[in-house]
Length: 157
Image (tube, rainbow, N blue to C red; front, side, top):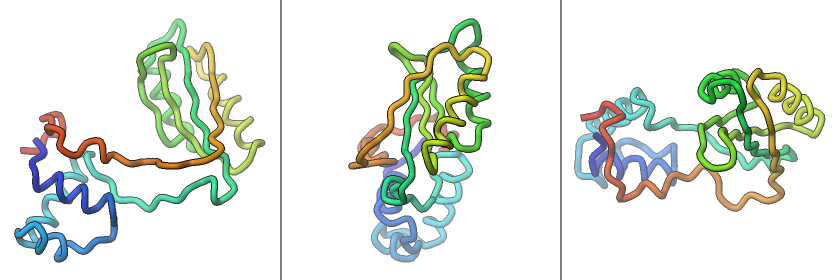
């Protein structure tokens, strides 16, 4: 279960992933060891991953999203196969008109064409709808989680 201190740590790191544990501890009125151990538990549980993000469009890359329909195979198996492709950075089961949602960044249109070929070769992939992003206003923000009730699925007490 994620508690209020965990949520506040996550919120602080969302704004600045390089923020010092001592600074967060002072603001939270807890010890630096508490902050350090909570970050470690959040990371081990897969709740938190601290990374540097760059806007791929400003680097001249193609940021693409795919909606995939699956036929005659398990959506989960197809998702697992897609997750093996190095240029794909996000794979999720979805509801609605398509079965899977995929995100990727390609350096150019040739790499995008190769990726589409790789996706279409996976058994069970019936249809691929591709969206090329032309401008990115907000990405990789989980701020919608603030104030949410933490689930026990993370294994945190």
